[in-house]
Image (cartoon, rainbow, N blue to C red; front, side, top):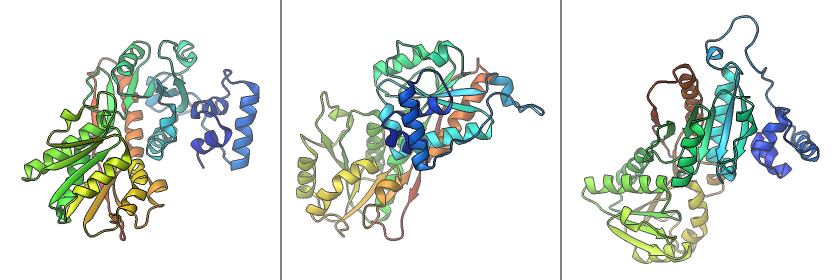
Length: 352
């Protein structure tokens, strides 16, 4: 049982649950009781971690974190991200690494970057691990926040050039790994499909997939859901833009040759495509091999047969972000670090 489950049952944000657990004073009484009732119903017991340095032998980390607390912060309108299994695994890694370092992690949110969170104004934390939308405006907010508090940006697209520490999955490696898997499975034709073509990490995964194909003398057909200012030129080659997922799948099914490989960049999208793949008789078909990404057990376990997916190693990304924040607090003048974690392929015994 996790803090994410408590937040869902109580109908509040993860940050609100964290405030109740940490006995912070900016939660209404009735909301706090609602959260405690959800914790009791689920049998959730928060980790008992003493705040601040322990008595006796001191660990080196506390010299850099005098308060013994860090923030896990959502910046902008990304609070719902943390309910996604892949993002929840990153949060789990953050909280577990903090716990092992005897540091208390406080979850908080700043929907409006212009209103600095009270935990920063009151200097209740020494630094922050930040989730934010990699769109231009939120990256500007991230840089402004960095002027007030040491931080590490976690997840997002690694192509965004900001002067802060950044820990992310290797999205380029994900695209190359997807192509290698499909090519080694005997696929001769390749396709990529996305419902979020303007997202930086989608483009990175698609571009690396396409580059790996071209390096092998192949090409990729890209199927994009139409969005405002869709950046079709960023995908190159054969690009098909449609107004709905249903239209995209119908076109893919019509054009799909034998021995094809399909890269779906997220497990969430694959679960949305699954009924359409079944409808077009492409699911578990010898005509099509599929690989997706994120290795979200909660979603993939619902699909039969369970498909192959790429694990971005979210928990280790979270752990790495905490370790980098500690290093940043120890060495505030060090150059910004950009770290990526290599993905790994997860092929179930009965998978596609």
